[in-house]
Image (cartoon, rainbow, N blue to C red; front, side, top):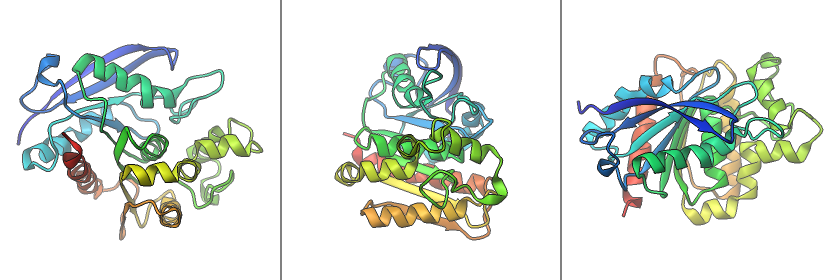
Amino acid sequence: MSSGTLIQRTYASTAAGAEVEYRVLLPPGTTDDPSTTAGLPFILHLHGAHSSSGSLERAQPRYEAAWTSGDLPPAVVACPTTATAGGFYIDHPGGGQWETVIREEFPSVIDDRHGTAPAPRAIHGASMGGYGVLKVAFADPVRWAVAAAMSPVVFPGEGHGAVPAPFVPSVLSELDDAMAGGDPTDVATHAGNTVYGRARANAAAIRAAGSAIAIDVGGADEFGLADGAEFLHALLRELGIVHTFRTVAGGGHMDALADLRAYDAIRDLGRALRPRLG
């Protein structure tokens, strides 16, 4: 199997108001010299709640397997460590601008350091990272043309309070509150931070961009997220947004099948990304 090169760094983030640690995985045949990665596509890898950029190190064998098989074209893959509490891939008024970090600032850091192409970009993540994937891809479908979300944190309803009852309180209800800016009555802020709100607001642009969107969920997800994924699937169909949707029978949130499912997601990225490359 072809080996990539994993590098760990930090940068001073204006958006987060803090140092942000990150990892970059360079494809086989390249080095840290930007002349070897210039013009390659960029894949943003997002980690889940209470995790870190170490998620990319754990996923490294899957990316390398996809490069070896030819399913994934050469690309620079990078993952920043982001906050859970006070983070959640949300821009917080008066606090960390974590969506800006992943959507604008961090990609620019990678572009400047490794010479990656500004478009098309791909984005992949699981759990809370899956929420971030869909949120970013629906907000800017031209740039983020290829997205794969595994076990995304989405709920079976569009308003505040749609978290499945067994998981209140939990990190899921913390996200629900954060999407509303801490005010459950702020319908507009909540909608603006939900995957559903983004899809509704930008449906025409997503359709026009021909975005490649893949969603995968375990049918026995321990956090009840299968119902939310099914709700999202139905909404995307209503909006005419083309996507692929897989429910893994008996699959959990991040269980023994996770490696195989993640490899499938990375292959989805590669197959959708390749024809978009010049």
